Image (cartoon, rainbow, N blue to C red; front, top):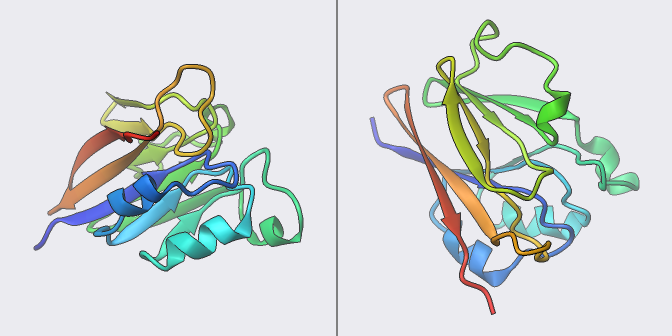
Length: 156
């Protein structure tokens, strides 16, 4: 089985940077963990690959009403649960059969493995906040195994 590459992005806040578009160009799926803030961002991402997105606390208006607070998707035998704010995680991932939890909200990129579950926050790919990096992430999935990659984007 070929490796599937999933792009992880969050907290774009209405800005889809050209550097993010380039980084995501060869992915099989894009997961947006909320605070999209503009339907045009989702449309531009859909031009790259299929998109799974959740609503963040700043996603308001008619365009955002179709987004759910949580989404679960299975790719290559790996179940991924997406929620904007990890504090709103309303289930025990391990007992729910989830291998990866993707969240946003904090704008801080992080990846840890706890109790057999990967917790990934790709950070913010939108406007810079404080001195935090502009970043996104990837899941590399092959034969039910997951490798997590976080990537800082070089921006002007």
